[in-house]
Image (tube, rainbow, N blue to C red):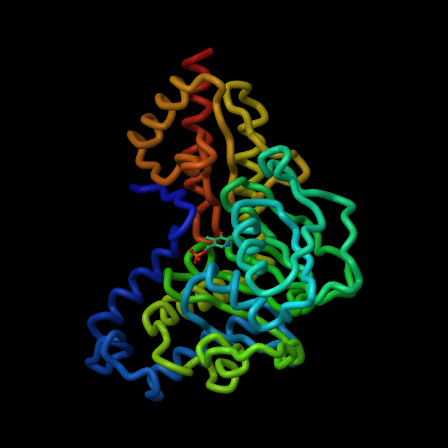
Length: 355
Ligand SMILES: *Cc1c(COP(=O)(O)O)cnc(C)c1O
């Protein structure tokens, strides 16, 4: 048995792996592989339609919001967003609360002015800044809902009249939230939604067509909306895996149902960490992420020993990010509660042994 705590690409439901592997040999009884069908065939259109409809349903999106699938990972959205929304003489507001947000800021500066309204860099991004003001004149406000590397998460949507843009790569569809409050949402699929190679972008059309720069066709959101996500050959297999994962989530009872399980997983792990002084969670309690749980041990030798014990017990992906050290357990939607039980049991046993 393998317990996969990888941060991304990460664990997906067993059923999804089984269905996806069957479809590689024979897609829906056609005798054809999902890898050899045209992206403009009714066969693939069916996959795309179901993926888009299920995503809309799970997020309860209103009619003003469009959903598209794009290539290039969330990192492409770091620049595609300002390219489409921000003129050179205009200013966008950004929240700097982690590695990914910092990268988004760097790219936005290529296209216009960036006003960093608050930052938690002073404490290595171990908390979420509070009480910051978003200037009313900003073209949009960009924030990261969950900081995958540092293990913090926003627990409310910032109050503002400025259009809201969110990078939800690592917590999309993990909890109930008002997706419609956002003007643009993007997420790489490989954490909570499927296989690497595709991004989901949710956006309001009325944001678009307001910049004066010329946009390459492939970078223009309007072109992708008009082409229904098949402007060019889309990542067919990645979209297929995404569709299967969305279908699975719907069968689990949707976002509210998965949130309950995600809450249980996070509570079990944080309660265990809080009860064992040998382990130390690194982030401010009120900003703890329910998706990525980051912790350290003050004795680096013990860290190595615990890591080896995790490996011996079938746990993978628990080592912290190369920039953060320590440990990170990612508890995405598809991670079973059982995996957290195995991890916390090992922690308790280890703490007792070392006491
Ligand atoms: C993983 C991640 C990214 C980068 O995703 P890529 O698909 O590798 O470009 C961006 N933002 C967040 C919050 C992430 O977790």
